[in-house]
Length: 307
Image 1 (cartoon, helix red, strand yellow):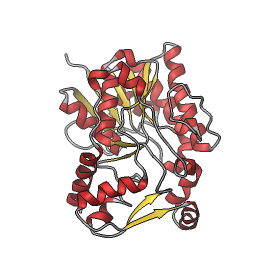
Image 2 (cartoon, one colour):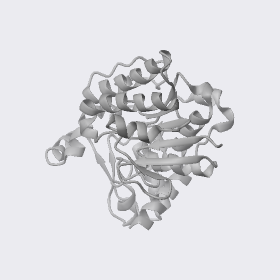
Image 3 (cartoon, helix red, strand yellow):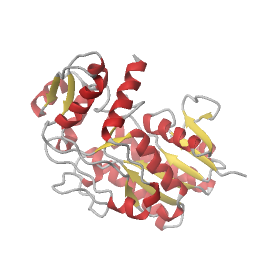
Image 4 (tube, helix red, strand yellow):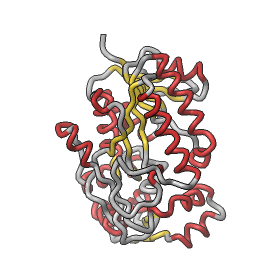
């Protein structure tokens, strides 16, 4: 019997990408969401114990790609994680968490996995607590787990990211593409299919268990460099806009999503760079990093097709 890989949050950008990667690698997949899609889909509310248990039942590996609404992370992420951990433990499955970088807080050097969790803002503290819960559950022998961490992502399906709608549809239409933050600061960006490949590699390799991993990425880009690649792919004359802190605060007065970005503005006004050495050293045969120009071109093509 083939092992069952379960994806929670399977209709989100990362979840969909993980389902696609697992399917491409020939795995048996269950795609869990509140509104199940496709033949692999299962409808379940994983915020409840019953829903999480049903979602995880029979799984060998569970990929936790679900998350509360961004504005509710501080209030809801810990509770969701507790429920998911119980479901994974009941199933006797391994857990792979799709994680981010908020727990480190402001940094002055490239981020490595051994950095302390120094975030002092609500969302960062919530993400730190979630990571601690998962790694503690592993240490206590309740489950086996790993975490795969990524920075801001872009790619086909990436519609809830600052590297998505503010840039690609605008460029496709010859309108102003807007970078959130300072244009001259290096910033690590992750391509969605590469994020999925990294997470599935963790799911396929039990030696990943017990650790957080920075998923493999290409060299950091400044906002200006990223937008240059977008306009090259679009074949149009560049029209760039840059949203600085003052403009973010102004827009945030009437746009709640933009308002929330103020909490992590340190990621946008200074270098924000990921060191992925550990993953590359441990899984050298499984490093997939799409060249930036190819990734940008594929993303632009997806947004064009989406219309």
